[in-house]
Image (cartoon, rainbow, N blue to C red; front, side):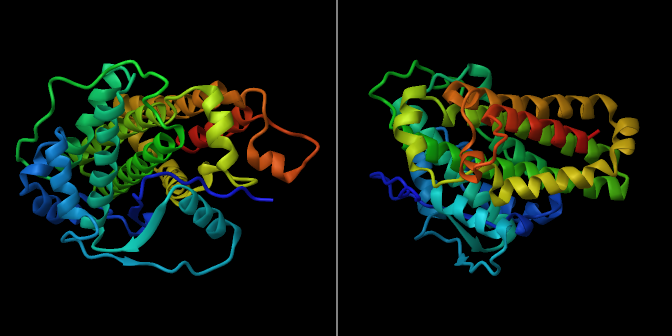
Length: 336
């Protein structure tokens, strides 16, 4: 028997491209980045409530961005798991201009997260906050936009109290930002592969630098998404998940793992051309999976089986943390 998906007072659904429709090169994103950076609300790095409201008006359902819902074709396990994950986290897949569609979902998801920072506070470390507020300017800069973006000097930081956070709402907001950050990481790795094909060392280094920042940013987003108590997770969040559910099988993560596999073929080039930067990237990827495992452990995953393992009813049951560690080892093996 499946649980009913959680409901809340929020009516926010996030529109996202399928990951294979993302832009693949800096040039493919530059036109959209140039178009959007012309608006002061975007150049503000979403640092104020007013700027975020303006971004929503620009990019939301009644804004200028044209998108169309897509219909998934296929009933294979991979497609069905991706559809289930999107349904649970209130994600709608759409077709749109690749650059504008990608940047729109990124900006809108970060608007949600930054609103929550200000309204409900966050206990994230200053270093994590700096990564999150700096990611959008980094992506625009990488796309060739020279306009100066504002980065807030005073960052919101406060200890969370029990009455400030609605766990399932933060879980959803955090995963929206996590999925779009993973899409940004996929974009940066596609650019890296393209730069390697073209043998452009400066572009290889800039793509690696962006990718490392996005990996670190995704770790920070996951910490934010899970910033509530273990009891709230077990009593409020976990019961809303369908039997056998696992967010690790969503479309964007699967696509990212595919890119990891493609990187494996060029590791010798990266080791020779950008050894130190690639080493930093590998360290960040390992830390990303460890951060995910840390969240899982805090919510009881060190002793409890994953929902997927539990639903399968196998005699040998791995805990959620053991399963994530297995994934970490496999993913890092693809990159070495």
